Image (cartoon, rainbow, N blue to C red; front, side, top):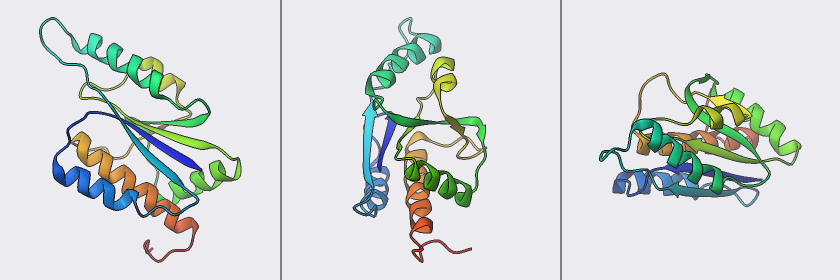
Length: 156
């Protein structure tokens, strides 16, 4: 299975890069894990939030893997537990699906991309910095995978 994370934003603080790398390297050989950073649109100078979202949408769509289950992070999405995420991943793996998770920019994601998603997933009801979302998502994906392999990382 290949998991791709598309994240709007570049130049994360060092702690984000280090934490992300720590979890990303834990995936075993049966998971190919990749982060693709998407350039955010600069705001100001006549660039409205709507124009910025539209520009980021174009970049995100261009970066989407051709055949992957699309999971878009959205504050109004499904509020799964880690065990529910693990069960979904188990089903997707059994179907031979690759996964693509999308983390939007500061102003969010286009309605078109959300409508295209196979799953809208809420990582938290809280508003979180995008770097932290990157780390939390990677950790939760690793945790879900560890559950599926009966690894002792996760405890109930």
